[in-house]
Image 1 (tube, rainbow, N blue to C red):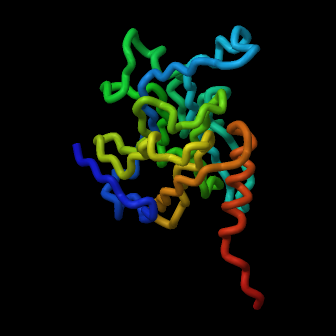
Image 2 (image 1 turned 180 degrees about the vertical axis):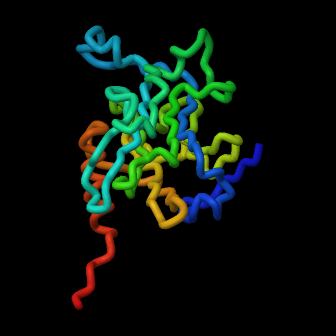
Length: 215
């Protein structure tokens, strides 16, 4: 397996990164991390006792309008070109033991690039901590992107993210004439939840669009 760890400024075409542009795997792998609730209402927070990280892919058109979101509430887009493999609630529920560095990722989204509708020109990859536990509190964990041959183009170490980061714009795919261009952002978002984060990314994408030149 070919593995590279690029700088945070990674930005190149998939071909330039040595990836097979057929299928990509946006995936999450982290060790079960229990968080002990504190305070008077401790007994009411049983469902928040472990870190739960979710992945999402947001599909935008050329005007950066949200056209589809693939996440734990919607496991595939309308064209079935982006498919979520199922939600892991705490990094442990795919087996009896913590699965960090195991062959299977706790959570994975598959992008079948050849099937993505022509009107989709941007795809944002986002990670969110469902109970607002900072990513850096996991014992061990990473987010990565690879192709179906196992080639990775980036790995994001959750322990190295800012201490208060609970939502992260991980990366962005932009459609080009004959390929997709990938940019690794690692940008913490201020919005709460994946739906609002998708809107925040839309705003950031729109700001970066070239300004039309007058005739």
